[in-house]
Length: 418
Ligand SMILES: Cc1cc2nc3c(=O)[nH]c(=O)nc-3n(C[C@H](O)[C@H](O)[C@H](O)COP(=O)(O)OP(=O)(O)OC[C@H]3O[C@@H](n4cnc5c(N)ncnc54)[C@H](O)[C@@H]3O)c2cc1C
Image 1 (spheres, rainbow, N blue to C red):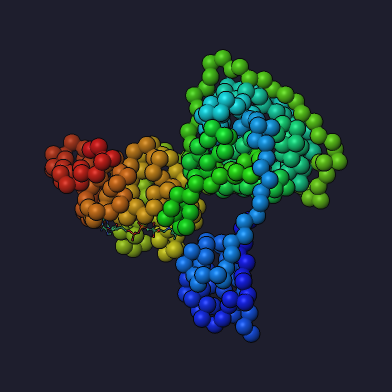
Image 2: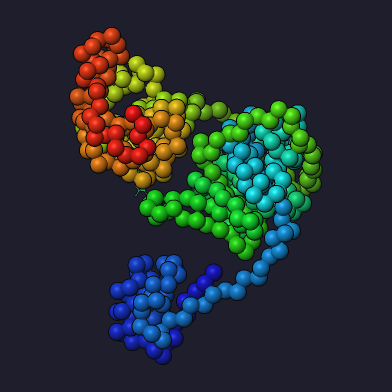
């Protein structure tokens, strides 16, 4: 980590005022003629670049370069409950294969649990080179200490270069704990992953409220950890003749002790999982009041869609928080999503732009949603939706067909195809 050193003898009230003006994080204080930088400092270096000369010095920590060639393989953590593998695992295996091809590394899957050995073979069908299985009775339930110990044991033995973990409840708990133990970096909720030829994993994700895409690289340590949400990547085709193998691993019982005792597992009632929906009608602030949702639910029901929303829908208390799409909500990749009265803010788009087909209805032809939509209708949703409902009910009516002829103007943006 870099830090900022203050050359005390060059400081006075005026230099403090100049620095306070520049610092976006209010990190400077000046009391009893002593200038200090607080922990709010993000080492953005603006004060060094633009502040008074001779007051601040950037101190870079000298990092010892590691031998990256000692680390080989892209590992995918197999997320599962009682052997039922979460589909994010398959998506990550597909991405791991792409990344591994760049550096000619093998793809590993790490599978830990109880009575799972016979389920390991299915992972080979996704093109894994080697599945490492820790099948021990103490691993029946996900308990953080033993699971973290197993992952650590695997890292010590195999020295993988990168570890991809699904951003599930389990993954979000396990990955950072082990990354901290390994004194290495972790990037949560990556949306793009790329591989450099020197084996550095470029972990790309929205940052600063979705306004920039940050490219994060773990240059000085290994393994490189990242988590990725379900539905961000696509599961690969099954391979006809799997070539990989399964290796059974073991860890000492002393490493499987936990202060937590699982007395009973009570399964939560499965609610609507937005990530699995194939058709979604997404509601935005263009819908004026809660009562108007009736029309939307009616429409959604007719086309067999799940209703979801943008953040204002949650803030107004109309929807359950699990139905929010976006950066701070769910990532979805349905076959069809219809965005009603949604502007298409980056934070919303980040959660749905990989959908197979996007239809947008908005009365503002310049709304950014039209930049990612495949098809758009510029107009008042309160006029368009009743017409669509009429079309569904009376598909043969010539009248309904006429009403929905789209104006030329909306075909302009590049992605729109119809
Ligand atoms: C850190 C951070 C995280 C965030 N995370 C999320 C997130 O996960 N998900 C999310 O959704 N937002 C998120 N936001 C908020 C986001 O920035 C936007 O404010 C939000 O997405 C806007 O929602 P909207 O499109 O429904 O509303 P608006 O931006 O207000 O858009 C409403 C649209 O409806 C159109 N409209 C109005 N009336 C009609 C009508 N009668 N017919 C047709 N169209 C009409 C308007 O032209 C407008 O384009 C986040 C913001 C921050 C800072």
